[in-house]
Length: 445
Ligand SMILES: [Zn+2]
Image (cartoon, protein in one colour):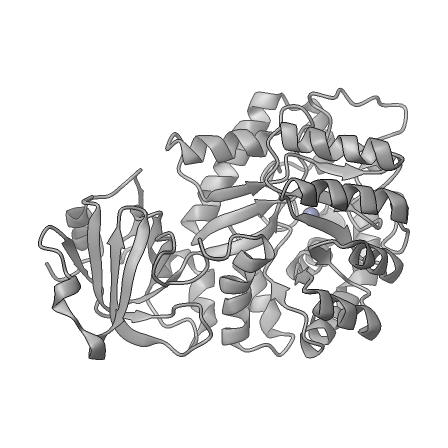
């Protein structure tokens, strides 16, 4: 692929909150060098050595962003995920994460934030992130937590029988820390092992047997220490928080994103809006657990998903009403398969949000939530060229994104990596040349 590409005659959804428009997108190396509306066509901006991609009939939009996934997660096992982690070797966990990452990019998600669930001292998401960045693997940009931090007996730490001692290298996703000093130390360790952000747990939840969404994890002192330490290293902090008390405490302590936020109230939503704290959606995951019913390998999760499901929907509606910015997240793991992330887009429609609202959650606002605004999330000058080419305008039919066959091209940092022909065949490459794009997509030469 040449380093100068112009995509022309495309319907563009730029992720800036406005309607689609016809135009062209100039790409120079990894970045978008300009976006022009057709009415403002200026041929001077067209370099002689550029490759033209005539995208007539297609809609181009920013690559989707999922702010909450767990790449180190098996799909085709009946075993409860934490046990799978205990018995699996570090290398098989890395390979699982790599396969999940690949399936995710192929679904149009060009960035994911991996929210814990990795080994403490061999964080698989960091290895997968670095291999993708080094062009050894085809996958999305991974924004990695390099594991998570919980308290002893907190969410995640009670996923195993207490008599089982977790080997720190293959320990399972959450590092326990107690007391402000130990919490600071744990943040420093996560950063040392490659974290892009810090993931913590301020309440119990659904997936850990024995705890509940309303129990509170960490003291205010511990939370302040974690957040202060993370922020001093320019790392944002996201917290798993479902019960109101734990959400409120985290917000007052200065957290940047609340994951789930299931039992949010008006007062705390107002506080989040005031402080610019984002709420990460994760609605479908609880529905999915309920749908799987008795076949889901964690019966306690089934009981708790029933408690949370309606609350989660109400929390999202309330938050949006009160001016909290929602960011798209799925909790993709054993319950929603990595790569089926778009299911959350459809689920959010049941909250009464418009396709525009939902697409912004999964593009511009997701980028802001994870601190990557200015780099990804919109089709505007200077951004990385993470783009997807769709058969239909998603503002008219957001469902176009849930069928992978409709996502005809996924471009990551200016390189077309996934192509699909009209017959449902999928092709992958580190970088397809423009000829291959034209021929597989049957574009005008
Ligand atoms: Zn999660």
